[in-house]
Image (cartoon, rainbow, N blue to C red; front, side, top):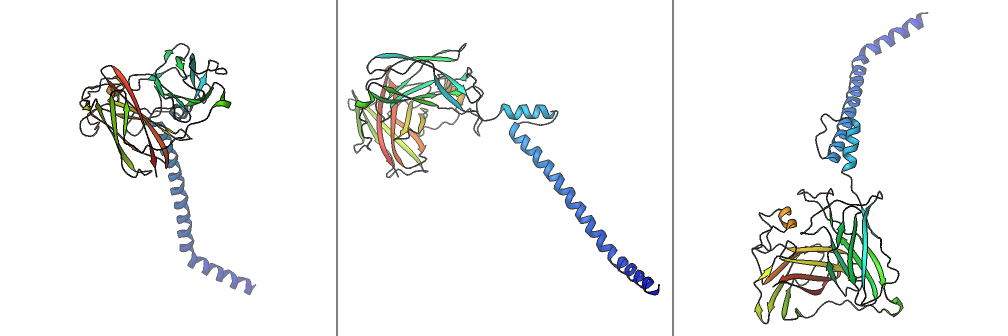
Amino acid sequence: MLKIFTILRLVGTVMKKSLPIIVIVVLVIIGIIYITTKNSSNSNMQGMHMMNGSSMQGMDMGDKQSAAQSNRTYTYTLQLTSSTSNLQPNQQTTITYKIVDDQGNILKDYALDHTKLMHFIVVRKDLQDFQHIHPDFNKNTGEFRIPVTFPEIGTYRLFADFTPANGQKDAQGDILSVTPYKDVNVGDITKYTPQAVTPDTQTIKTVGDFQITYTLPQPLQANKSATITAHVTKNGQPVTDMQEYLGALAHGILLKQDTLDFAHLHDMGQMGSGSMQGMSMQNMNTGNAKITNTGPNITFTYSFPSSGVYKLFTQFEEQGNVITTDYTMQVQ
C-alpha cells in the first residue's frame, strides 16, 4: 500500500511540473491546424477568382463554376464540307468549310481581324504557290465559301486565320487569333516532286516593276527579337504612295520549312519603325487606323521561336494593286 501511495505522489509531481509544457504544445498544435485550414480556404478562393477574372462577391457556387467554364480555353478545327477527293491543278474549285470547337459546336461569331472575318491562306507544303484570300460567310450555317485555283500538283495546306468574337484575350485585353489548318492533295501526287526550300543569297527580289530589298540581322537567331525591313522601289524610284491594305501598311505570312509553323505579321504604317503608339486594335481591325508611313520601307519585328529555314511572304498595295513578294531565311 505504501508503495502505491509513493508512486501516485511521484506521478502527481511529474504532472505538476509538465503541465505548462503540455498546455503549450496543445495550443501550438491547435494554432497550426487553424492557420493551415484558413490558408487552404483562401487559396481555393484565389484560384476561383483568377479563373473567373472578376469579383466573386454575390455569386453562388453554381455561378462561379459557370463563369470559370465560360472563360476556358477552346480549341478549333477546320472542317471541310466540300469534297477534296479529286482536286485538279488549274481548275477552279469551290472550297467550303466550317470552324468547329472541341465540343462539336460550329463557330458562328467572329470578330473583325484586319477588316476581315477570315483570312484564308493557301500554300503548297514546299512553300510554293502562296495565296491570301477571303471567303464569303453564311452566318446562319456558319459555313465559309471560297473559289480556289491550285496552279500545280502537290499537297497544299489550307490555313483558316481568324479571331473568335468571345475568344481568349492577351495581357492587353485583345482577343487572340486562331489558325487551324487542313491538308489536301491536288492532282496525281505520285508525279509530285517537292522543290527545295533554300535560303536566299541575294537581298533584292523583283516583282514586275518593283524591286524589294530585304535587310535583316546577320545571323538571325532564335528567341531573339529581329527587325526585317523591305525597301520598295518601282522602276528604280522609292515607292512612297503605298495604300492601306487590310488595316495595315503591309502583311507578312511567315512559314517554317517542313512543319509550316505559322505567324501573321503586320507593319501598321506608323512613323518611327512601325510604332503602334496611340492606336487601338479596334481601329486596326476595322480599317480606321491612320497610316502615316506610306513607304518606301516595310518593317516587321518578330522573335523566331526555333532555328530552321523560314519563308516570309510580304504583301502591300500600291495604286490599287496588291504586290506579293517572298524571302527565305536561315535562323540559327
